[in-house]
Image (tube, rainbow, N blue to C red; front, side, top):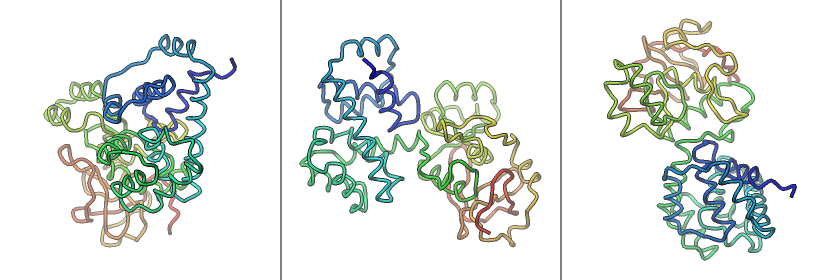
Length: 337
């Protein structure tokens, strides 16, 4: 059979999540759809939080036992996910298409054959001012019984761990507008702060390695980091900027040194800048760097800065107070001048 189920399953999962561990967990749900085991929402939530692994042998076993009808169901899921993305983009809702895909998989799969299903789903997003209002509208539209808290929990978890190219104007370049979008996404998603990190997902293994390697800056906060930041993306102050420069849009991953951007601390980044000045002269150009000795942030405009503040505060949004200088960040193209 030319249709490779294993590859298709992965494609469907990747359409919703870019984090590899979450993809594996998502496959469990897709497999359950194929064999008709429609789980209630609370069971689905347990899939996303459980420590589940799928081996190649298990996937092959499932593939070998799928019927033609079950393969057709998988194709239908894949096509519906693609259609949701296309129509959300057409409606200028590109930043929400993954949320809509999650909602479809979370509680609307059984309604996908209704007339104009995707168009009606997109309309719910267009006409809702909050997540709670969205779920009320969806339940009225389709007769579903989705719990708003469950939807919010899953979507929040997705945004905390994944990065979508849809937040960028031009992911193929490194520019000041997309740097601001990167910073705003980190702030909205409640990224944590761990010394020496630069936007990668903080797994338990990664956290323990950092704790052991740097007892002065990381080890003394070990309990707080384990309780608050494991499972989230984390960065230190300069790491928030380096993470953007090292983000590979083709793989949806932060890769150390990607694109040739130089590694260095906050003071090095400021000293390397060719264009800079005292904070009193800062031009209104979102995406500038702001600096004081030992610390940097990202100016987002209108007097506000997003920066990875400290271990116990994470990524925050503040005013310019405390910063002494501004600078154009090396490696960033400035479009708004």
